[in-house]
Length: 115
Length: 107
Image 1 (cartoon, rainbow over the protein chains, first blue to last red):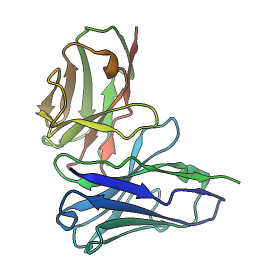
Image 2: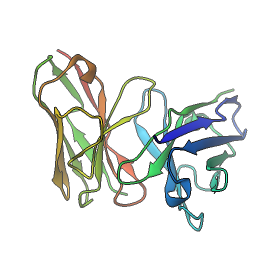
Image 3: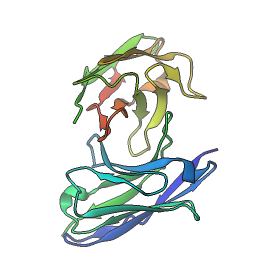
Image 4: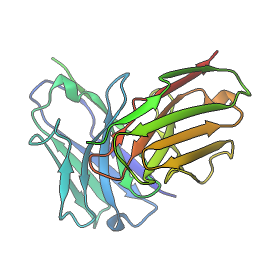
């Protein structure tokens, strides 16, 4: 069974940094591109970033370009999101998602940015 | 970016009702469309992928149809656990984009 477990969410001040992690199990992680999707409180779903299966390409939403960096470690089945220069607009529940025909989602990790 | 427009935004309904939610893409996404439902604070749950394929374990009262730009999700007989918010999502082109959501609520 596919399992994705996000961690690293926390409370931080504007301008701060956080690194999210997603531990994958139950499937061959290195065969799939992976994405981060977020959901601000009471709002809809927003795709944030995608990394190809061998890390040769990365893609970002305009709202995070230049501030967030996606990466992965296929030897340890881990996905990461380094988030810098955080603002209140980045406050959200962050999900890792497989880039597959039938996407699998983790349960999310909460990032709160506030002064 | 491809815009996904769902309708209605809110859908009051009763247990046993047949309900249909529509999703329109601003350009063709072929059949690369998924449907999810979500309860507050939880991860979205995949119901339908590739426009009409029922995800394993999802009850057969859920069905999806459409291709290109126009899609629909139908629940043949609404059950108490189906009151939730529903989202469509295209994964044909980056950035992936989602509909704004349809809240199915008790009438």
